[in-house]
Length: 162
Image (cartoon, rainbow, N blue to C red; front, side, top):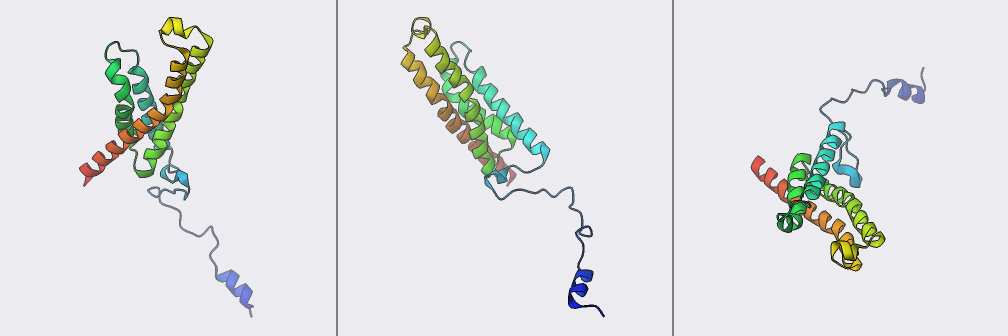
């Protein structure tokens, strides 16, 4: 005769007998990172979209004449195109904007460092304080523009699917 504990342990399934997960299933975390699943291709797609958005904003700077219009609009355009490539949806939109805004800290740091180290007033024709303000304003402006652009891209994609 088995005791109740022995019966209970012999009737239980070991965790080796549980069914395997299907390849189509994906797991997500219940944290702020819930938008990014643990499938490698999702991260690659997000990275491609972020790099594309960053490149669009950087390429808009040196084009003579056009840069007067392209620079203010480039974060929105970059968010729209990059968000479409990254297939950013609800929570991914926020992370997409944060990552691109963080990448824009690199040119901002270069602008601030150059204006402080060199004779920027003579070379660039504007006071050093002006370039410091521009450097500080780049990252939040890029974050806001790319987030709005990615949001518009998401809304257009979701409406076209319905």
